[in-house]
Length: 99
Image (cartoon, rainbow, N blue to C red; front, side, top):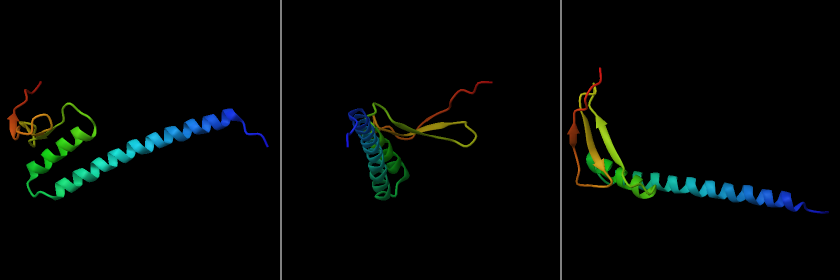
């Protein structure tokens, strides 16, 4: 029985691609688990959001990661957590409304 080397090479490439895809997914799932662990360790909402912003920034190699919460009706938006500057909390801004 002869094994076709092209088929074997193609299978090897597919397997390597699948392994890389699974490793990428594993890293994302580990980041989610870490976020959940940190969120469960605090009762303060803003601390939880800060931990989420930090972990997302670290896990995905981001330069910036911020969490904004909008007021109902859209009159104000607040920057509540920031990866690049953890000291920024509850910075409120009233965005200009376009007619």
